[in-house]
Length: 228
Image (cartoon, rainbow, N blue to C red):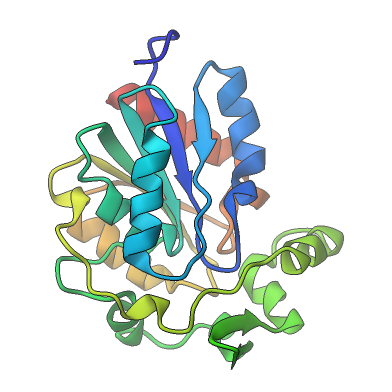
């Protein structure tokens, strides 16, 4: 436990992003006395990304809360089995069960608009400029342009890795559903949040509420941290 008596918070980013996507949420959490760190992983292989999150847990006080956005939900589902983790917060995220892949989850629902704005080249999945309106369309245009300019492409086969033992079966979970999400289908988010028995809220947001509604997201994370 940190000197403040509060759990630390470890953030896990999705595809087309890096750890800085949580900046608007980290600042108020730090101001409230939470020790925060954002894991940085290369989106090459899920097992490697999970391993980096577990190494990142060593850089903050235990116990910790893991916060995963989008594909980061798959990462915290794997990394959250670590004994140092007390709870999981999912933001517009994936949350596979054992043996499932992210691709299998997504295939059960209609393709979202952002995946019609991609190009696979050099072994990576690149978002076309037009895709940013589907990724974070509730941000001002200037901010959307920055998000696109700094997005990081995942390996083309990243979503094909089967999940191991899912942490949400043994750790308490919280979930934010983005009702206007055009990247991860909102109905998929509702399905996985219900399956994991998560404490859930729904926001009128795009795929990135931590950017468009950071105060609400930070408050939700604090409630999860306080509950553990």
